[in-house]
Figure 1 (cartoon, rainbow, N blue to C red):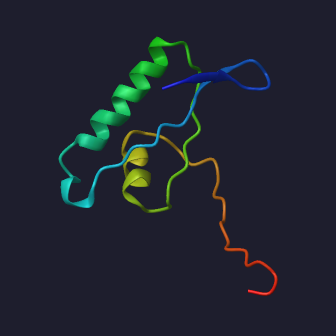
Figure 2: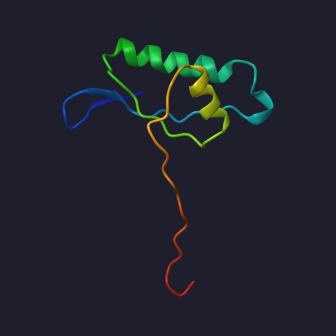
Figure 3: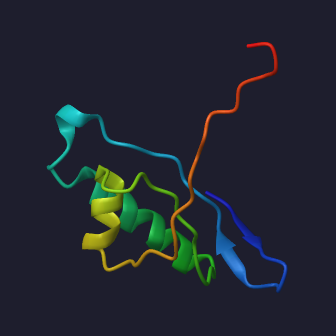
Length: 84
């Protein structure tokens, strides 16, 4: 894991990319990984982390259960190259 200061100099925890296979969900593995990452960030002086999840997905539900709130929703669209 890594930290990086933002434009204002506030230290943030860079995103971690981890997931739990569907057949192993519901056993607390995701929560354990999440809490370990947050502990690491705290121990390394981070002030915040920005997360990106799929609305209503497993990670979104975990974030809500951990008390996080949404700051907004970004839409993603497929862009086709001309002539496609």
